[in-house]
Image (tube, rainbow, N blue to C red):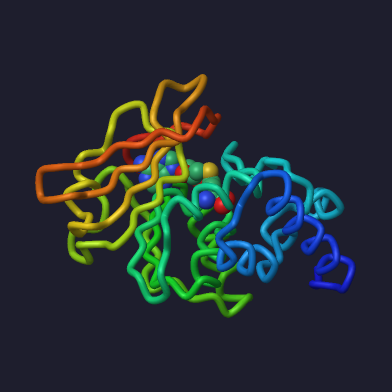
Amino acid sequence: MQDSFVHKGKRKILVEYLREKVGISDESVLKAINEVPRHLFLESIFEDFAYEDRAFPILSKQTISHPSTVAEQTELLELQEKEKVLEIGTGSGYQTAVLIAMNAVVYTIERQKDLHDFSQKKLRELYLRPKFQSFGDGFAGLPTFAPFDKILVTCGAEILPTELLHQLKVGGIMVIPLGKTEEQVLTRFTKKSEKEFEKEEFGAYKFVPMLNDTNH
Ligand code: SAH
């Protein structure tokens, strides 16, 4: 599969939709979504629909999030260039690619081996380089590389992974969908001091669950 002018044209329409209908105003997020070829992270049968605001199945019964969800989560991070970002749930690698396109220094963890392998290969093919790509359990974070400016969790956590809050810099932001399997609330924690966090909520979503351990 190539990135043709047809794909690029569809991406522009998607970006306008995200701006006008979804209300995304961070131009750096919109620019990244305009750049990253989402269709290349999907199975070829979904190619024609890749720029619709839809989620699709990926390997291991997981899903690539809606573009609007990726845009909203990324906007909530208030990302600055060169910031260190930890992503939990690499999945297809699409969200990782968006973060890299925004010039973030990205550390990412995936617990499904086939998705870890798929996303690693895909990102390499596109010359998009995360700083570190780990096959492991995101509940543990990456203590050796902590602290992080920002943490983005792309799976729904029933229990708040407090270890991740430890790995956040003071002044840092963690965006995480929190709640039981049926529905989660997109939540943003801002670390005010070592012990104090500001908590904000941004509506209901449905993510695949954040699970313990790894799956070969
Ligand atoms: N950002 C991805 C979204 C994939 S769905 C994309 O753009 O495609 C969420 C991912 O989180 C799934 O791939 C799932 O396997 C992964 N996941 C769930 N629990 C996890 C954990 N504890 N550690 C790491 N990844 C996890």
